[in-house]
Length: 221
Image (cartoon, rainbow, N blue to C red):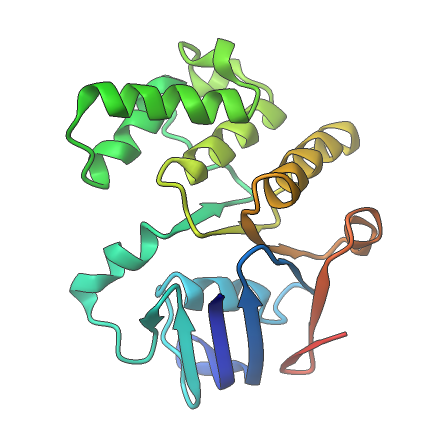
């Protein structure tokens, strides 16, 4: 099943085309890397998949939604099918780990308290963070914060996880832990993963399909 499809799509950052004529197809279960230097358009591709940016010329679909004709009111429906992990974690610092996760469930329409509690327990277990539910984000290490960010991305059982430089703020040992967790989700759970990175060594350790952004293009290697 094809989850992401770009056909000769121009990727925009504001009004400027940063990637011309992108052709990218991602199927269920794929592990896809998007490599490139800062400013090469990597993150703009992610922002297009989440409907933060519109495409210029060409066609694009994500999780069954046409990104070119997507109505504003349908954007939340698309985003419920996606899990996004950022470099800077983006946790709510005034709420506990449990409250961070519960906030997302409430925001995405979960009404059943028992089912919500069970889902929070499940994603904490999956990310090895079951004992940290009561902690505040500032009480966690960077690696633990990123594990919670991954747990948050898993809450709505997304068809696809988008990881934008997920290890960019972590030390080498912690980076390896996070990469192992993401790889496990992909290989054992079959979760589709698109990871933006500038670190080619990650691809060598955890092989997948590779797209390289440079000179205003992004092509598979």
